[in-house]
Amino acid sequence: MKTILVAGGAGYIGSHMVALLVKRGYEVVVADNLRTGHWQAVKGARKMYVGDLRDGAFLHQIFTENKIDGVINFAAFSLVGESVTNPLKYYGNNVEGAVSLLSAMQAHGVDKIVFSSTAAAYGEPEKQPIEEGDRTEPTNPYGATKLAIENMLKWCDCAYNIRYVALRYFNAAGSDTEAGIGEDHNPESHLIPLVMKTALGQRDHIGIFGEDYPTPDGTCVRDYIHVKDLAEAHLLALEYLERGGSSDVFNLGNGAGYSVREIIETARRITGKEIKAVVEPRRGGDPSVLIASNKKAAEVLGWKPVLGLDQIVSDAWAWHSGHPNGYEG
Ligand SMILES: NC(=O)c1ccc[n+]([C@@H]2O[C@H](COP(=O)([O-])OP(=O)(O)OC[C@H]3O[C@@H](n4cnc5c(N)ncnc54)[C@H](O)[C@@H]3O)[C@@H](O)[C@H]2O)c1
Ligand SMILES: O=c1ccn([C@@H]2O[C@H](COP(=O)(O)OP(=O)(O)O[C@H]3O[C@H](CO)[C@@H](O)[C@H](O)[C@H]3O)[C@@H](O)[C@H]2O)c(=O)[nH]1
Image 1: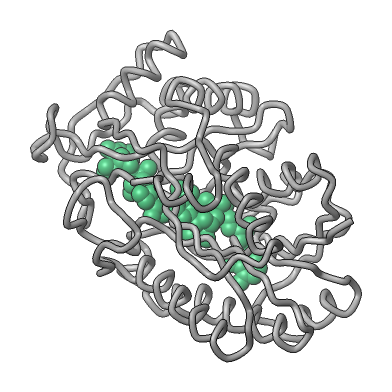
Image 2 (image 1 turned 180 degrees about the vertical axis):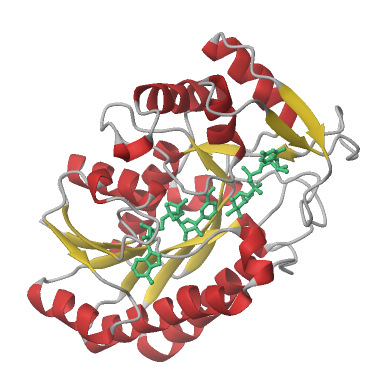
């Protein structure tokens, strides 16, 4: 049985990864400092280590006590706006955490890593759908830290033969209703959970950040991808590396775009709630359209997302209506 270290496994996407790995018969070891994660989200892991990736002694203990076959790294700060006002917090956590993790892998002879990158690595896209070879020019420090780590991974492959898959996610959403886990960020900044909180009556309205974009209804268009489809892609990436696959970068998105207004309409239909929406000014740094080409992930990894927008919204609604206070109750 293979043992996988999931760094950031108590977070939103990481906890869904843990649940899938356990379901598919992997032994799972989690490392998380619980800064934004929740211990209650970690289901079925063999061990959970609470500590910081930047702490070399902490990682040395994990790699000494467990025979780790591969690593998946979700641990990062990921609030775009905060990264603009406090870039050192982002370089300090995201890049230093990755340096420390790769150093421990090198020291302990672990040679496979799957890394959470982001569509923010592209910045303002040159064309739609976005392909992996397109220009990468992040427009905020968050995206820049992820791109810096992708570059670092390239050099670590050359120097230490640590092979990697970097996965550039588009907009993750939804939940695993069977495992009883979901999205619980504080503060929450993502559109779908905020729409759910509005449907629950926890917020008076959802703000629509700008309606003067060059899109069909004037609101921003994004590619929403179910967190369970994301987790499946990581598993395929891990299996690809286990087969000897060479280091590479893949987009993970549905390949379809929905506007902010379309998301709110879908949520009204699925929840049966009114969901008041108010147009507000644009949020700085938002590209008008981000849609993934997922062709490369299909061809090389054999990944095909199967859960569309209705499933994403209904699973998000199941989680939020069943856990109105997140993991706290
Ligand atoms: N949510 C999205 O739509 C989205 C899109 C693109 C990329 N991503 C990336 O996916 C990853 C997971 O995102 P998420 O939404 O699940 O975030 P999250 O904040 O819920 O999860 C991150 C986890 O990492 C832990 N962590 C952070 N820094 C750490 C450190 N130094 N040491 C140990 N643990 C640490 C946190 O406590 C948390 O449990 C992140 O790397 C994020 O940048 C997310
Ligand atoms: O209250 C809100 C919140 C968001 N939006 C809009 O909804 C869209 C989606 O926003 P959000 O859910 O915050 O996601 P993004 O800003 O698109 O960023 C996500 O998706 C990116 C890739 O597409 C990743 O890089 C980021 O990590 C991830 O947070 C954007 O157009 C926002 O302007 C609103 O109109 N009102």
